[in-house]
Image 1 (tube, helix red, strand yellow):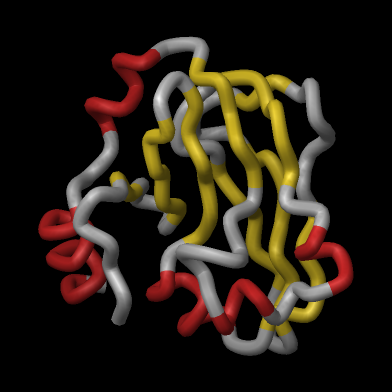
Image 2: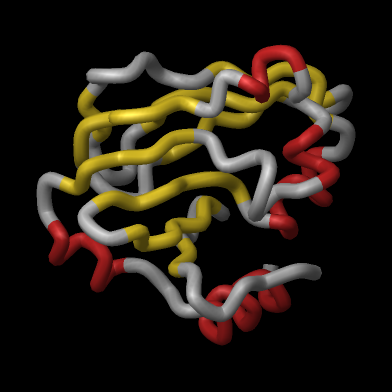
Length: 127
């Protein structure tokens, strides 16, 4: 399982990468491997407001449809449009090509609720 050390992770299996004043969000390698082959990704629009721990989209695999939960609150400033035509990127490259949204956080302190790579790895081994 690929687990970048400089990312933060949510209990719902999303990753967060801090990029200056913004954060990039996607789903983890663990999540995509559990879901199987991704065939469709539904994402919010630029300008939408995300609320921490609330659904903001979904991923559909050959097995199931799973909600995406916002790891932090904020305004969507960019959406990865490539996933519309290439949902398989989620399986091939969950931490690089398959980022989902870039968000301007409305409350930086919410980052404190996320796990580091070590804590996330421990959690996935307990599941």
